[in-house]
Length: 194
Image (tube, rainbow, N blue to C red):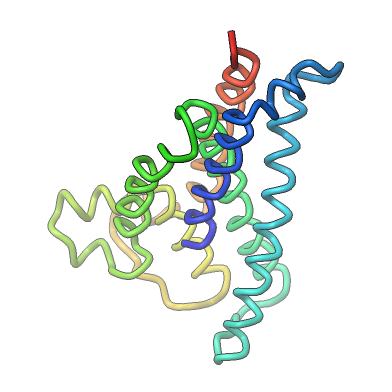
């Protein structure tokens, strides 16, 4: 959930830069059109990796532990960061689309249902059929299920295709999000103030 909740900070930073003319100054410089948005994503990824490290250390201090080897733990951390990277591109795009930092609150309301309508806290099998299906197909659910499995922790399981292929989908969902929102972000950045 921490990887998803950072979306608002990215949106605010991007929309603030656009509103204050910072992006216009960058656009006037001789650099690749994608450099500014890639730089934003890189900076936010460093911040996200640090935040994830702090959360994991705090978890270890209160008794959480991985029950698998270092390779599986690194793979789980990699999946979490991959999801964050994908959501950063969504945040960058939305930050470029909205009209100012104050509009982020309207979009932020959408982040909460998406994160809570997943298998993070409740097994989709215990939800009404249609709601459980939505929760299972939530990209966050695939990452949650895959990381639980990689950490050797109890998973909710399930009898659907998406539940049986959580690891595959934990890779495919973020790749799909990046493939959609990276080019949209670059194109939107290029068209600012036109």
